[in-house]
Length: 383
Image (tube, rainbow, N blue to C red; front, side):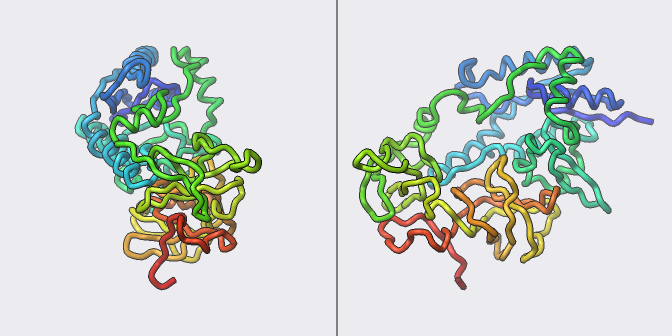
């Protein structure tokens, strides 16, 4: 029987290393592939891809597999980074990891691996794939604290049919232990966090290299100017730090939080108090929809939704799907629903798909009567 050929995306981290090791143990013909996705300002200080490649090569040598490297930086810049900039310029807060998975790790990488003669690809993501009657489902990982299905919701049937997630059924602590026991040189390497092309530098410093700053007023819901911002792109819904306006103007009271953006007047809308009603939303509208099965879920059924990674599933209903948009209504108001982020639907352990948050409707008891500085809201025409 011919061995299945698996190309594993190896980043130099412990997760993808153990994924390759487990597949080798299972008898597959395993080859590693290191993807370089960023070249601009790629230094040891900010995005140490050279060090990661050295680590990946050391692991490949240890477990006895071949490894190659490929440069996808042009594809990344065109398909991911350009969209990242467009979203920030439009006042939204994008999640480039979602787009990177759909466009690079499970498209450019998959196409390259298949061209090499691979049967499947594999990564170190914490998720699972299940096939039922020819339909592939994306499932949450066994380790709920590490589940990464939220970042994978844009994968389609073709991609899932050719993908393995060897870590989906085990816990992170087991992964570390396997790496240590097998003598992998990166067994205690710190997990990477954040976006590689930004690295450890200040976010504003990085973004200002590509988008011009556009200062404006920070104002309350009542329209009072309480400070100045250097650009709406530097701020996100629910943000507390970095506003430079302290508590109340008399120096006492609750902290300020970003509640919305008034793009036409270049105003940042803030409220005081973590639990202010203007930070709570009962409903959101999402666009750029992607459903794993290829068709939208049933409306009015009860689902769970995540509007950010590591959030517990929030009970909700899909109230409407209309021309590339959908509306999600929550059983309980959700805090800091952020345009540009992803709303992902689940039915128990099964990830159904989702879309990009376009707008939200605040809780009915929110302070919305004064429209001089309103948070952005969008409704369907019949509301």
